[in-house]
Structures are given as C-alpha cells and as structure tokens.
Length: 79
Image 1: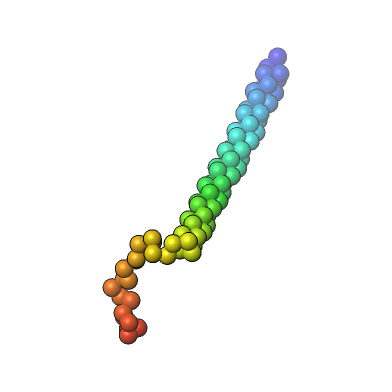
Image 2 (image 1 turned 90 degrees about the vertical axis):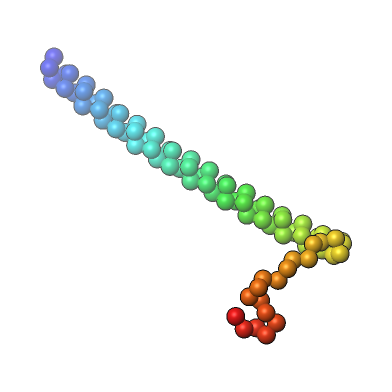
C-alpha cells in the first residue's frame, strides 16, 4: 500500500508540473499574439492617418492648417 501511495504522489506531482508548464507556455503565446495584434493595429491606424492626410491635401490643400517650422530648421541650414 505504501508503494502505491508513493507512485500516486509522484504521478500527481508530475502531472501538476506538466500542466503548469503547459499553462505558462499558453499564456506566453497568447500574450505574444495579443501584443502583435496591437502593434499591427497601431501600424494600420498610422497608415490610414497618413493616407487621409494625403487625400485631404489633394482634395482641399487650403483647408489643412499650416504647420509652423521648428525653430532649428533655419533657411541657412545651420543648426
């Protein structure tokens, strides 16, 4: 009876460890997929924004606000 209990305990501990490893790898994989989809959405939003700006510039260039030049962008090219 004692040997059977030891075998059962070793089996259950092994099963728990294997299940824990499975859960950790699954969680890591899901996190990676989630982050990749967020980055993909961000890139798509940026591309859409750039295309909208180009389209608005083509349709009505006077309707876009004029962006002021940065202070370090002088006409002489020196910084």
